[in-house]
Image 1 (cartoon, one colour):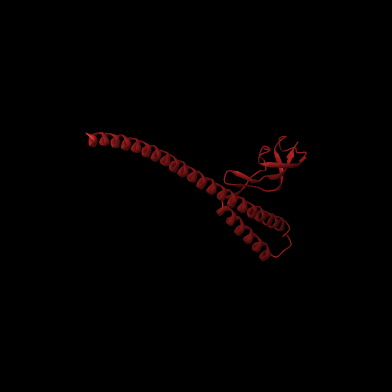
Image 2: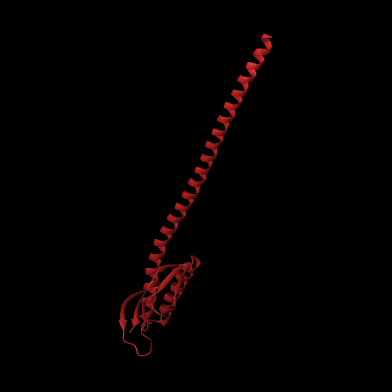
Length: 161
């Protein structure tokens, strides 16, 4: 009889040990799933931050290149007396820079004749105009550019009054 009683006690001890181990396994599994989810969230956040930093750095370089492009625009306005080879050379450089920027998704947008939009235009003054309705862009002092769907740099304009 003694052997049967010990078997029952051992079986009861085994059951409680199995239940404890199952509970511990469940806790460990939950901790594993949380750690996995935390790591995935960390990976996404780092990727987002890396992408944002890269775009921000690229933006600064592109804005600097736009200043160079503005210099070409001004130079072309004053090449009237220059030999045609000089004018053609400046135009070729300007086209090359424009194509480089377009390859990066940067495009110039048209402002002249458009209704003034504060999201696209930076008004630096107004002009009296008989040909244009009030509130329409009458003069573009500096071109505006988009980078994809975002306005990279608003156009500096004078608005008809």
